[in-house]
Length: 305
Ligand code: CO8
Image (cartoon, rainbow, N blue to C red; front, side, top):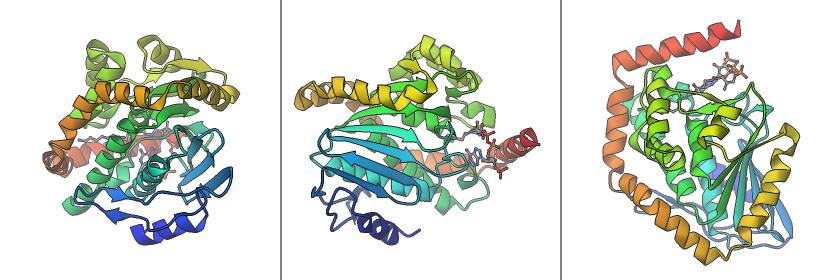
């Protein structure tokens, strides 16, 4: 969907009350969105892949990914995701964001592999810029961000989770989370690695990345990849309660502390964005890498039958 029609569909649904003058491309290629005004206590917005429910009396937005079958992140998905995040970020009444999935058993299957398979270098570049944008916005958000992980969360799904301030996961041995890129024959870029190091430390990241480990929920808790496990039906309730605690801290003090911890990591990508896009495009379009992705896709299909 073109950005303009996507924005129209988001603004038409009355998200955050009044929405106007959306999406102006900044010189940095970021989407800038004008502030949203509130006319109601509670407002919601459903674009096709992302649903947002903002409670303006608590200042907490619940953002649900709803792109069946597995919330894989295509360019279209990422565009919606990024625009939604930008709007919430600009909305002064929104102080906290809970990220979750509306699909049973899946938080997100990560990047859409079909966006990296058989695509032109130009398209791959466009896709990668959107992936970078998603991470920069989420990891650098001024809002309190809590991942309510109600299902499996491999690769890019794990990146979303570890980009939040806090992670609460459904306790279910069938769910897993981790950066499994090497299992696909690809390599997590340095900023995926940095985010993981900042979450679970150097040694755990080294093992996790080299082996492309997907952790069961107790294993994820043990290494600190998630902060809490709760019964499946309590993930959102727990996230809401935890959010209230985080929001009890004055925003400015919390935001400065967050920035102090995360800015050096964000700056590394900000100063190397173009090179990172070039690296990705060169890497992903290699015949050998395309072959690995093809084999992985075949494995996914076979596993199904
Ligand atoms: N992208 C595209 N399609 C996907 C993806 C994906 N990430 N994951 C699953 N699908 C498709 C399946 O192929 C299947 O398609 P179809 O119905 O046409 O056969 C459909 O979604 C449903 O999948 P499953 O039947 O497997 O669903 P289950 O509920 O049984 O399992 C899982 C869900 C656990 C999510 C499982 O599908 C899975 O493990 N998927 C693969 C996840 C994965 O490995 N993702 C990695 C993506 S790469 C990434 O995020 C970071 C890349 C960084 C790039 C760095 C390069 C330099």
